[in-house]
Image 1 (cartoon, rainbow, N blue to C red):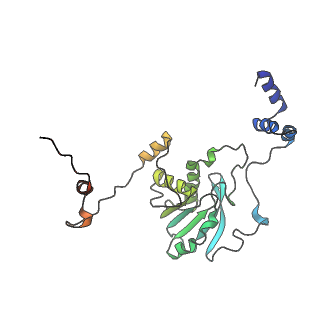
Image 2: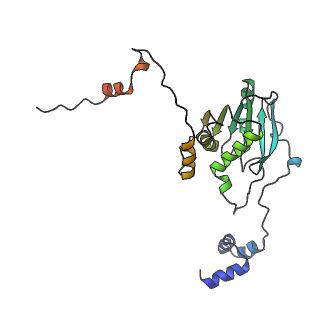
Image 3: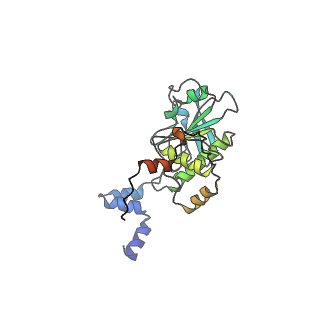
Length: 248
């Protein structure tokens, strides 16, 4: 595009998206130029909607909103809230699920003595305060920032660490990063329906991960003449290929 054409486009007040949209059909350009920008930040009033779950939540599971969570108002499901001080289990849903997907697991965790919490993650369900515009900045949806949402939620609930964090699908990435970056807060990890690829490529994240203290796992003790006492080197020497004969 020439400087003259670029100046004409700027004079019309058109974005790149509007220009491309106009090129795809007759009359679309003028429509896009005349359409006002919509409100980008999601701030829905749920008072006119049915309760979360619409009456299908199990007994002992409730929904509530937690404000000021890394710029969000986070909707959570919780079970075991009747008894303060229970160890916290944080359940992170995948795509395109909600906190609602954990509803049948939470009563069992509460019966086992835990405080089970499942949030609607950023961009999902009744959690508000995120930008849903087409041109929205994607950085708030990076996995590290979505992990910051969970760290802020743990603090807002009055905790400094969890008993366990469980991640499903997309939640597995957040959970894996949590165990890597904040092992003090997330000492136990369960991944369902998705794995964790390890340390991200970002140098700053690698530095953060390397500063974290990784606990040393002691080798299990074993007695002689038992299968558990066989060393890997012994197995390789026993089952490996026969050595090549040497020429004399």
